[in-house]
Amino acid sequence: MTGPTIAPAGATDPLAGLAPLIPVAKAASVLGISRATAYRYAKAGHLTTRTIGTRVYVLTAGLRALLAEDGAR
Image 1 (cartoon, rainbow, N blue to C red):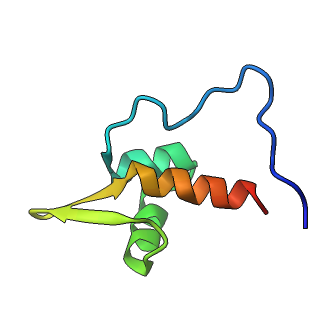
Image 2: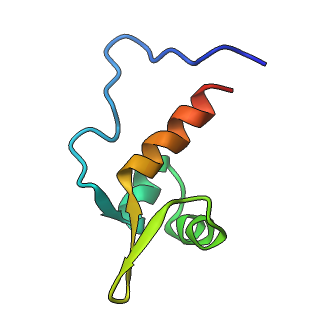
């Protein structure tokens, strides 16, 4: 097991300035995965989502937790 990943000097938070709920396509872009993969992850419960009407949104806080979890490994 390795320690936490340290961001390089000058690195910015990829989630800074995002709304609390973002479209799945935007979450895919932030994560660097395809939109189809993001929808697949959302359906499997790997991304924290909320549905408003017929649209699916990803919780930015859930993305932050996911990224922090990955960085701790």
